[in-house]
Each structure stands twice: as C-alpha cells, then as structure tokens.
Length: 226
Length: 226
Image 1 (tube, helix red, strand yellow):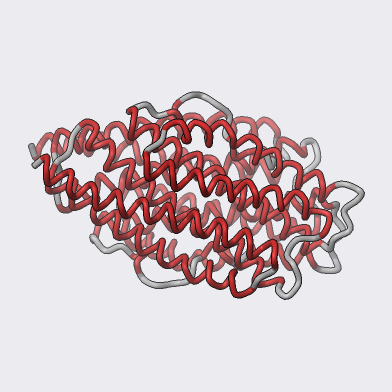
Image 2: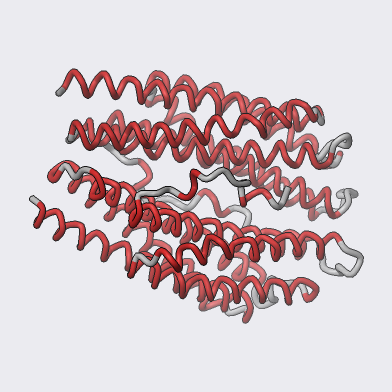
C-alpha cells in the first residue's frame, strides 16, 4: 500500500508543480502584457487559463481516487487534502491573471494604466514577478522558509494596494473615471493574487509541519480596501 | 462502519447547515446595514465573521477524522470532499459580507452609496436577500432544483454589476472619487457572493448526482468587470 501511495502521490505532486509553474508564468505574462499594453501576450494569458482549469479537475479526480483506494491517514491524508486545496487556489489565481489580461485587452491599444498610477502598478507587477519565482521553488521543494518569507512579505503588497487608493483619491489624479476603475481593479486583482500566494504558503507549511499557520489569530489581510 | 459513517456525517452536515444559516444572515445583515448606514449592524457582521472561520476549521478537522477512520468511498467520499469545499466557500462568503460591512462602517454616518448608484445597489441587496433564502433551504434539503435556479439566475446579478460600471462612467454620475470606488467595490463584493452561491449550488448538485456542473464549458462568470 505504502509503495503505491507514494507512487500515486508523486504523480499528483508533479501535477501540482506543473500548476505552480503555469500560475507563475501567467503572473509574469499578465504583468508584462499589462505594462507593455501587449494584446497578443494578454490573449495568450486568457487562453492558457483553461489549462489550469483542466489540471485542477484532473488533480481533484486523482486525489479522490487515491483517498478511496489507499485510505491514507495522518501525514499522508493531510498531504492529499492540502493538495486539493492547492489545486483550487491555483485555479483561482489563474482566473485573476486572466482578469488582469482582460483589462489589458479591453483598453488596447491604450495602456490600461493611467500615468499617475503607473509607478505603483509597476512596483506591484515587480512584486508579482518576485512572488512567482518564490512560488515555483516553494512548491517544488516544499520549502517552509520561502513560505514564511511569502507570508511575512504580503504586507508590502497590501501597502502598495492602499497607495493606489490614495493616488486615485488625491488631487494629482487626472485620469478618467474608467481609468480610475481599471487601476483600482488591477490593484485589487494583484493584491488578491498575493493573498492566494499566502494561502499556498500556509498549505505548504501545513503539509510539511502539520501546523496550520492560518489558525493564528491575525487580521484578515484582505480588508485593507475598506 | 456504515452506521458510524452516517452518524459522523450527520454531525458534519449539521455544521454545514449552520454555516449556511450564518452566511445567509450575514448576507442579509450586511445588506441592510449598508442600505440604512447602520453602524451597529455593520459591526455585528464584522464581529460574527469569526464564527464562520471557527466553524470552517472545525468542519475540515471533522472531515479529516472521518476520512482517516472510515475510509469512505464512492458517494460517501464525494460527500466528504464536497463538504470541505462548501466549508471553504462559506468562509470566503463571510469575508465578503464583512468587507461590505467595513465599507459601511468607514463611511458612517454617511451612507456608502452615492445617490446615483442607490437604485442599482438596492436591487443587488434585494437579490442577495433572495439568494440567502435559497441558500439555506438548498443546503438543508440538498435541493437540486433550487441549485439549478441559483446557477441559472446568476446572470441577473452580473448584469446589475455591469450596470454599476455604466453608471459611474456615465455623465449623470456626480459622486466623489471615493464614492465611485466604494460603489464599484460594493458591487464587486456582492457579485462575488453571487459567484460563491453558484459554487455552492454546484457542490450540492455534485453531492446529490455525482455530476459536476462546473465542468460544462462556459464563460467565467467572474469576468464581466473587464
């Protein structure tokens, strides 16, 4: 049983690593497409999202089969259940990269980013790029230290998100209302991707240690906008 | 084994029904607090969100124990896994009602809704109220017909969300930029709650029939903003 479990879990883990790679690529590509107003790159991000949807469905099916056949317990069970949550989170992250790409596509050939918001959005896209590198390594190596770096670093992204609100409310803002909406939504989507990276990091800590860091009482990171 | 499974599953199902009731109440209370600029009601929604977080953690733990001890297969396994997804979705819906309440609290004693957006937001809150009634009955009775009604009805909420974008971009909009942001975010949070109701409805269909309606190819409902 043990050998079969390990074999099957290895196949599922490789699916999850593939999902992490696809999400990381989508984060980078959606960010570049946004900054460069690149229609083709945006369309590719939108089209590729279906791959993540399919991989999620496939991963869940594999996990269900494994649960039914192998009846894993203790750390094995924890790993299977955490893996299902990871698959769902990656699928959602794909949706969010697609939302960013859709805004890029809609405003094309114009940039979706009003000049006044550009510096902050560039900083957020840079942050995404760094996160995407962390994400693949963390998932492939189950690296708890990277997970803790991601969890601790999320505040910086939240601050950039808050800065967008200050900018669009401030007197230097000259953009149109549509540009205002777009920059707020872009910032919100990026901030949510950051939240999901934190959720992934917590699942990695949970898989490795059995300790769920999300059970520590702490403020909901997703409330800075209000 | 079978008797024990049924007993334990019954306890978990009653947790899930309780979560559905709490979410339904939060949807109604956050909506009323928003329309009436009621600070106390808004604060209650924010405070009560912790109950949903605790119930989610509790439900996941119960499901893990059940999986380990009973090794459910086929429809039983499907039910346990779908239940974990329901718990996670309800937890997220609680967050969204809390976000709505936080906007209500921040703008108090002013209403968070600029006059020009009021009619549409009232319609969205009415929609939430109807959804909340459907939600508890659907979950308690595993009612596939209600589930299909919810899935089919979500377009109407998406249309209201789109209408908000038209309003704030239109020439009749006289609100401030902060009011514009708030009404867009409120609309987005309500629309997301609707999406999550659809996800719950799909899980109910999946539990009852084994058929996952989310695997039907269809456009991502969460993209109307872009």
